[in-house]
Image (cartoon, rainbow, N blue to C red; front, top):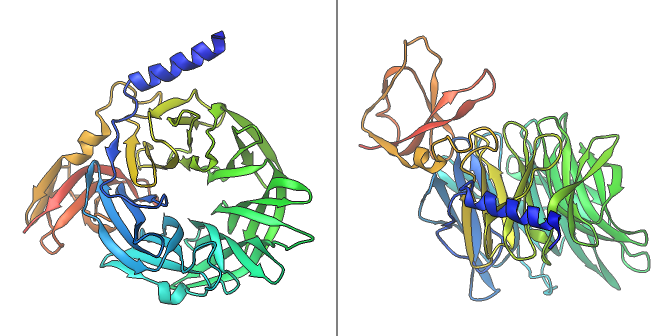
Length: 459
């Protein structure tokens, strides 16, 4: 075996053996679909949302559950629907969880229109917006993928690949929408599809926040010029074309400097990344980034310190992870050993990445136990810190030097601010019983620094 391959294999085995990643923990319910979505709210509460098929392809029920550390809540039903084809989830500027689905038609059933079903997790529970968003994209008859992101001023945006049947042909287009309150508007196309003879097909559409205003957008386009990725700037009601490169879109993210990171594959299934500004595209190759046959399992995220993380299923269905601190990609680590086809990657407030992976009926989760090169080998495992809870009745005592010290925050299970805490005795008798998190307040204007401990308020 060549020396370079031996070194790579040895590095991967050492990474897994060192305990850098936790043991897999099963997500506590199953789905007949592969459209699990995971998001993390302030306070490091992880929400898992999915649609569970009932009676084959004719109906589905949407579920959600939240996790603090390793403890999952019981799944709660969100909504009953005819069918959910694809989904997306995210957190808005107010800390609310959004779970969006395409609904109403299977791709090969052409006698109904499609629409987007929206559900929002507020303080009082889930609120469904399907009566408001239904028909919001009137030309859409069915669709492929759905993306959700929030811009710098807190406005949620959607990116879709819509599928339209017309006499004599059918085509996909890339579109974007904006949600204001309970209403979604679709101001323009990103790229308009075309039927034969001037055939143009538009595939996956991803949207991410632009550092100034509006959004970045990247989508797949296939026409007489060949298959490629097209990058646009979405501003107001317009989409401005910037760049084209690559071939197959896999994932996207924005780092702390505002650079747009796009992950894609070429014709040989090599995983690559590109950093994009308004004026340039700089392409990179991930170390050991050879993908399996299913190219849709790649995910990416950016943590609070600006590190870019990428996870992908390899040819042998193991899950690999690498990170980039602004230079070269790190040697990949093996985060999970089997049944790794789809992935969802997200960071907590300490910059620890959480990885969820699986295949249709069963998903598992792992997390890195420390930040690379910072806390490795010497830090208390993240799970211990977050699964030990203090039971509180009436008053919460917070240690500290004086009442003039900077306050801490008490966050509810959804990550919303429930109270400000000062050193000493704090009256919490007016709050509802349940799980809360005590978080130190961060620098001015930057919210909390992250959870320090979990408390359970009881009567």
